[in-house]
Picture 1 (cartoon, rainbow, N blue to C red):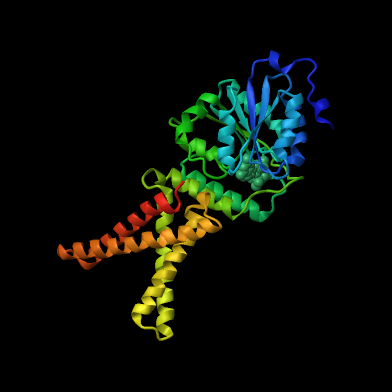
Picture 2: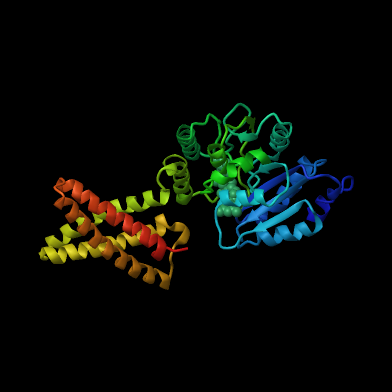
Length: 375
Ligand code: GDD
Ligand code: MN
């Protein structure tokens, strides 16, 4: 069906109705689904003042252009195109910030969230009965469609982890299908982590006062066109979101990642040291190679894990490595200096050792954040 025919609304021209609800749809390569989704929204939202805001991360398949083309003939359809950016949660947040609607709905762009549940989600919030209405797969009347056993089990496990860590009894906190009152979103906004995929969990955990939640069952459909973006990165970002929402209040998650990498670096150091000694090297030569290798290991792991969002590539990778060696060398001097000084204060040897390591690590973290991976 052509979009200019499906969107024509002969009875109620869009600008005569006040804007009641905006549907925010994050997209990454969903060109094959966009027209059908708009068609479905036009049906279930007929009679309301509505708009859909696609937030597209500059998809190579031309999703943004397609939405713009449709938007020229329908004022219901808008686009926020982000360039050089990624992330489902941050996309949703920017979509909400781009609309004036008093009620916001969020749904996927791949038709897996069944639009039949949308009016009930909106109604639960618009009526004032709830601050947020969550489309859930895990109560009677809902379901996970044709997900295989493995995917169901993984989702269940992640759901339990989220519920326990963030102390929520919402049955499907991983859902990306929900409606929320603008005021409730605005109140949570300043504290959102905006990490990864799970914006609902983020909102629930960031709300300054507990939200009144309504749960609306729906069936998760199977994806017909396009591809799911789930992968190792999605899982890592989920754990990062949970870390940020729990211990993140006390220690920045980036520092935790940096220290984790440093801890792994100790093992690399020892492994190289042992191997080099095994080939008959003198200790000083073996120790020097171990330090050099461990620093490079730390650099590359920090580059793709701790600073995945600012990853250095190409020539800048070499510059970054050089600066990281320089910073680490000074860090090592500071480590030795502080350790020796503390030991001289008649402290126990391990207290002195740990003091040196901590000062060295903090130096490395602060300086590499400011220089190696500066924004
Ligand atoms: N703008 C933007 N940026 N959109 C993205 C990005 C991104 O980095 N990554 C994914 N999307 C869009 C997809 O195009 C799709 O419209 C939607 O976000 C969901 O992505 P999928 O890759 O289809 O997710 P899924 O089906 O594996 O996972 C869904 O399962 C959850 C249930 O556990 C997610 O949709 C959740 O929203 C849902 O709750
Ligand atoms: Mn999907």
